[in-house]
Image 1 (cartoon, rainbow, N blue to C red):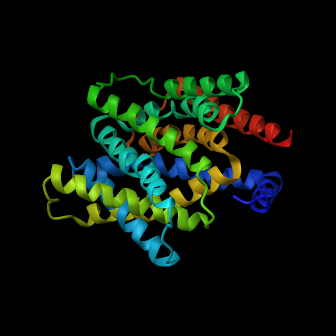
Image 2 (image 1 turned 120 degrees about the vertical axis):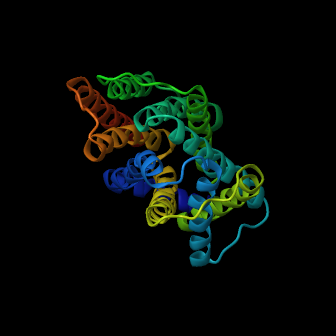
Length: 301
């Protein structure tokens, strides 16, 4: 980025930060609905194919709008980012969504803010602040309380491993998306990554999984939602937030994903919501608020 663009970006952070946080928060909140959509609307047992159908149409649609391709070294960088943020992450996300209850799958992913804190130090040289670690731990504790329910939950080891792998992939992709900021619009950057990740998924899905069965109207509706809202819109908001707020600030918003998953399970599936879980919600919201205040203070200094 040029010094002029960096200055304008810094100005935007200072003056529009609360709005930027709210806009960016839409992405993880919507991602929290992935689990209920997967289990209720999508054909079971097709994590790679579903991941591809979520990413590639969204990427091609955005690419048609921007009509701009990467140049030079941005080709291989986009492939790397598309693998981390899209292809591998979405595959692991759907494996976890198919094998684990939504709240459990989202909770495993909630370790991402902690991972991002240390990755920003390693990759970007950002100091590690104890207050940031404490806020992340409080949020993680709140998310764990969200899982406490009257009935027991059977945990699938493959689903758990996929959840952790996806969390690590998105955390690294988030940090690298900050380090590699191309001189193009957020819409273009999003189109590149979704398209690259989608094409990678096509190659693997065709080789690993059988063809999809005939899709019902509910299947089509679920895929359309995940493509247009859960990918095209949310990834654009996510990458915009990374550019304006920084990786650590946006990573703390990922706690909203399990919060959304639990609330949707309660509201739409009639799952229980206990006092302990309500305390967990308060801790999650408090953690996000504290993290954003901390990041805003860092920006001012």
